[in-house]
Length: 196
Image (cartoon, rainbow, N blue to C red; front, side, top):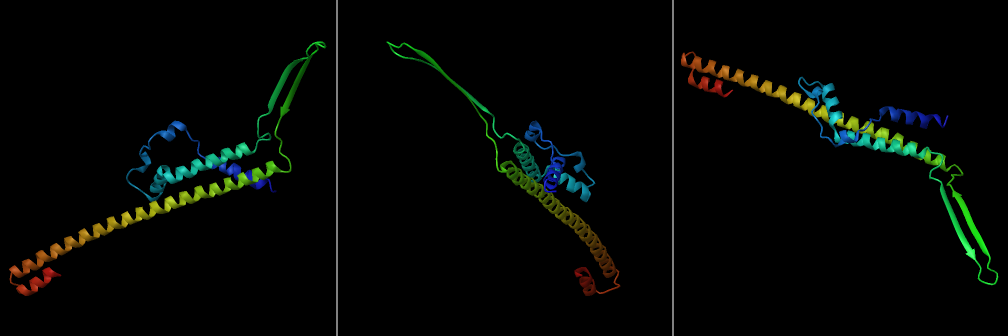
C-alpha cells in the first residue's frame, strides 16, 4: 500500500508533464489562433495558461523533479570504478631477482539500510509538491485572467450604458430647447431641464 501512492503520484506526474522541446523553448511565443475574438472565459483561460511564464516555469520545474525521480530510482547510483596497477621490481646484484607486482580492483557504491527507499520517498514528496505547485500556478493565472476579463466586460458595458445615457440626455435637451423655443415652457424651466 505504501508503494502504490508514490507510484500513482509518479504516473500522474508523467501524464501531466509536458514534453519540452529545447528549440521550442527558445522560440518566442506566437499568438495562438484560439486567442482571437470573440473571447469567452474558457478561451481567455486557455490562452493565458498557454502563454503564462509562471505556468511554463512550474511545468519546467515539474519536468526537472520528474528527472530527479527517474535518477533516484536507479539501483546502482554510481558507475563502477576499475583500477589496475602493474610494477616490475628488480633487486640489485648479487641476487638480481625480478618480481612483477600487479593489482586489479573494482569499486561499486552500494546502498544499504534503506538509503534508496528514503531517497525515493523524498523525491516522491518533491514530485507531489511540485504537482500541487503547478495546479496553484494554473489556478492563480486563471483567477487573475478571469478577474481582468470580467473587469473589461464590465467596463465595456459601463461605457455602453454611459453612451446610451448621454444620447438620452442630448435628446431630452433638444426636446426642452424645442419646447422653450415654441414658448410652451418658460426659459427658466428650459434651463432646469437642460441642467438635469
